[in-house]
Structures are given as structure tokens and as C-alpha cells.
Image (cartoon, rainbow, N blue to C red; front, side, top):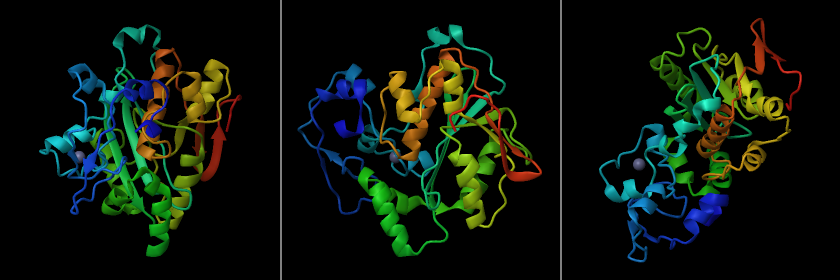
Length: 312
Ligand SMILES: [Zn+2]
């Protein structure tokens, strides 16, 4: 477990005994720690105080994050995996004194995974007023132009090290379906009615996700670029202009702001949550989170960067 955690979080947990789990042959669950769907706790775990168990970090249930958990009535499963993602991202309302009004009601923190084709599409919906995570949209994505064997190797290499390759295989759907479902999700939150995005702005760490990868994947999947991907916030550019410090990536920003890394770096859903924590920190520090990049509506490949000082 310590491998998954850094800094304070590791400190909080370091005195705890490791947990051991027995395996069931029927299990198909993700296993951050080689644990399984029907994992049962061994007696070797030290009973913890109620306070400790309250703060105990748990890996996310990657079925639940995709709306597909069938174990909500299993107390061991609920004790093992986090099913309330907003809890870890709660902020102290007494620190709201420096907060500035933002131009939108919500931020959509997005962090894609997959270099060849998109493999994971996680988005966190965060209120700009309460800083709460209001909802989450998370899907694993099945490549459309790859052989089964190549997919297996790719997923083993990418997600095997986190122990979540089984859940990927269980749940991944094609990008076209992900985009359909995501559109409906945006509509349900009244953020999109078919044109450009309303009342919300995408926040990413860098320009790669929305400038490069989404249009590329749309081409591969033979669909039009959805019109809600017209503009976004590259948090690194806002960070540079607000703190006057150049951070090349998420880990650097977290280190500088002394935010401990949570979960597995390069698992998209965990990276999104970490980016969300950087965003929350910046909002509490009084940052105005403005759009940094915008597409030309007449030539979608043409992206204009709006900040003079930018990190790229
Ligand atoms: Zn679950």
C-alpha cells in the first residue's frame, strides 16, 4: 500500500499493519493490492479506532466509478473500496475567504489515459462555489483499431501494474459509446444542449488531452469532434501566471503546493482527482481559473492560446 501513497498519506498509514486478503476463483475485481471482489479480511489486521478508519485511504471501486458496481450490499467490499469519491476531495469551508467568483458554475476536470488510443476517460464535476465534487463520469475505453492481442498486451502493460487490468477488460466500451454517454451526462447536468458547453469549463493538466488526443481519437473512431470541446483551461498555464512558478506537470504542482499524491499516478481517475485537488488549492488561494485555449470554430484544428505567459 505504501507504494501507492506519498508524503503525509503514507505517514498516516505507515503504522498500520498491511491487510491480507484471500482469493476467490470467481473474482474479477480490480486489485490495487492483489485483492479481489470477494476478498475477505484475514485476522491479521489490527483493529483501528473509529477515527483511523474514518480517514483510512481506500482505492476507488472502479466498477462503481463507472456506475457498474454490483456489490453495494457486500460490507467487506464496501469496507475495502471507496464508493464515495467526493469525501476525499472535501475542503474546509473556513478557508473560503480568499476565493474569487469564477466565470462558470462548474469545472470539468478531465485527464485521459492512452497514448495510441484513448483507454480511459475520467471527468470530475466540481462546483466553483462549494468546491464539492458533484458527480463523476468515468469510463474505460476499448480501442477500435487494434487487434485483440495488441489490446491485451497494451492493457497488461498499462493497467497490469496497478492490478486493474481485469476491471478494464470487464468494463471497457468503444469511444463512440463513451462520447454518447458523456453527452447525455452533460445534458443531465444541464451543461450542454447540443451547442457549446454551458456554465462549465474543462480543466486539464496540459493541452494534450483536448488539443491533440480527443480530435485524433475522433478521427480513428470516425466521429465528429463534439462541439463542447471548443475551449479549455490548461491548469499549468494558470498556475504559472498565478504563482509565477513554472510547473511542468501535475506531480510538480502537487509537490510545490505540498499536496500528497493520492492513489496511482497514471491511473486516469486518480490523476483527475489529484488535478482536482490542485485546482481546489488554487481556488482557495484566490486564483481566477480562466480559459487558456480556444479552437477556431471555422477550423477546429486551429487552437489559439490566450495567455501570453504559458507553459504549453
Ligand atoms: Zn464496488
